[in-house]
Image (tube, rainbow, N blue to C red):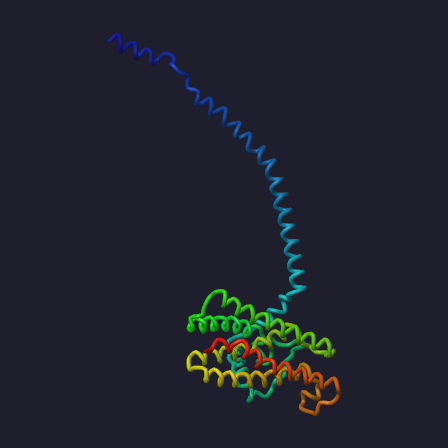
Length: 283
């Protein structure tokens, strides 16, 4: 009883250790609460200033990139050359393979601006040349694989050589136009589009050779070479020759003769490139 009472009495007395948790919480709370406003006062202006400075730098850098990029690669003009649809692609491929029945080759204009390719089958585009180049590389890889000659390095050489020949062709035409001093509305992108149409015939020739043999390759390639020759003659004569020549009249004058020779040379170069880039794929 005495022990129990003493223990009970001890519980009523002072504790052995003081409880300082409440005091610590009471002291830490005001400090933390007082520290947050000070930090926010210091951090918010700096963060806002940094964000404003960063956004201004980003906008200036974006404007500079857009301005310099548009100087070398006209993005706004590239959108025009990719404005195609399924109907246009089908009709254009038909003209590239069989151009003999097509009569009207003039490009349509609206307020002195050529209409988009999806509204005019005669307008040049970059969709078919781009897809044709990619498909040609894939078909070339397939042809090399069927002959047990496929390797990533060889496929890279095939793609780079085709691209280099295309660039050299466009540069040669631009140089010829400059030397002859031809005033034409042909742009570099137009020449790139016209030069890229030959990939359609190259793909047909290689696929025919893979399916039916070398004879089918030569026959289909011969047909496609004749088709692209006619297509280029009828298309470029409206761009390079004079109005009288475009109407089918007799070409006169030394300058018109040079334009006619240039048109024939560009058209004749297409079959040469088509054969050069595909003959080694069929064995």
